[in-house]
Image 1 (cartoon, rainbow, N blue to C red):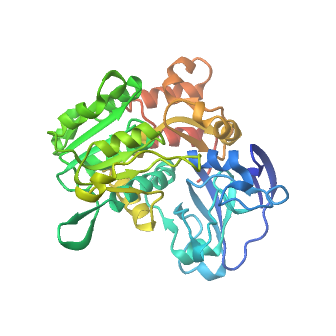
Image 2: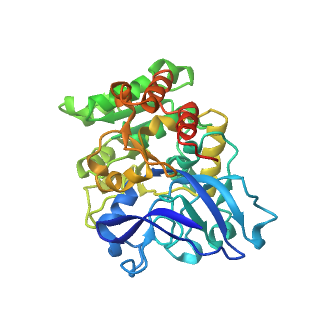
Image 3: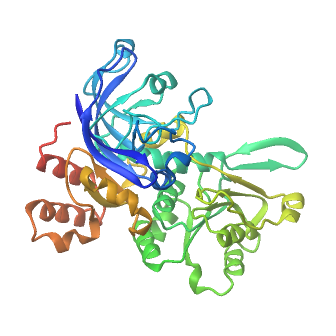
Length: 421
C-alpha cells in the first residue's frame, strides 16, 4: 500500500513524499485518513526537529509523519483486533499515548503513523490503551477537532479548588462561578467559549479578553450574549488593548471579588501576570498556552498563593474520556467545533501551512489529505466564486451556515474530488 505523507527530516525540513507502507502486523490497523487539523504543537516540533522531546534523534534517515489531529476510515485490521474493529468503521485518535512512560506520539515519533498522510498504520500501543475511538458522527472534521476540543475539556476538568481545613481537591471549574478566558478569541478560546456555554458545569460569569477587535467581533457573532444568557451565562467580551488599567476593569466586572477560574491562552508573560492579579479567593489559574521558550517565566504573587490561597497550574492535552466527551457532544450538536476552523486545504498545502502557521491569521487550518487544493480562508470564498465550480459551491454553503464550515461543505468537497469514505 502506497501512502503520500508529510515527513519531518530535521529542524525546518519537511517533505511531501509518496512511499510504500509495509504490510500491517497482526497487532496493527491500516486506516485511510480523511482530515487532519494543523496544531501549533506541530509547528513547534518542526522548528525544533530532533531537539523536541517527542521527535526521535534519527529523523534524518528515518523521518516521521507529521499530524496528530486526524480522523478517517479503517481499511484493514490485524488479527488481534478483528473482534473489536472492522473495515469501513470511522475513527478518531487520542494522540497523547504516554505508553509505558514514553513520550512517543503520532505526528511526532512514528515512521508510519501520523495524520498528514493518505494512509497510515496505527500501532499496537493505540489499541492497547483504548485510544482508537469509534466515531459515529457524520463529519470527519468534527472527529479531527475532537482532539483540540479534548484539550480544552481536559483543562476545564483539571482545574481544582479546595476547602478550608480539608485536604481535598475538588476537580473542575466552579459551577456557577466566575471565569475569565485571557486571549480567548483565538481558535482554542472559541472552543472554550462553546464548551463553557454548553457543558454540564457552567460558570455564571464568563469574561473573554483579546487585543484584536476583529477576533472579538467574530467571537461575538458566533456566541451572541443573548444565546449565552439563555444558557444561564453572562458573557462579556473585552478588548484589553483599549483599556488603560485592564486589571481594575476586569476586577470590576467580577464585582471586585476576582475570578474562580482563569485560563491563559497565549504564552505572554504580562498576560499570565494579569491572570494572577484577577484571581479571587481559592481561584485557579490554568496556563494553557505552551511556550517554545524553555526559560519562559512570569511574576506570581506568592502572598496570595499562601494566604488567599490561589492556585497556579498548567494543562496540556486531554485524556481518552475527554475525547469521548468531545465526540459525544459534537454528535449530539451540543458543541460545534467548526467555530474553530477558518481555513481548509489539501495535502499539498500542508507544508506551507505548518511552516507559516504563526503568520496565518484566523483559527484552525483543516487539511483534507486525500485531495490537492490551496489553503483557502473561508472568508475569501465569495471572492473566489468566479474561479471554479468548487469555490462557488463552497462559498454558497459556507454563507448559508453563518460563515462556518459544515458537514454539507465537507460532503460537497469530498464529492467534488470523488473521495470515497
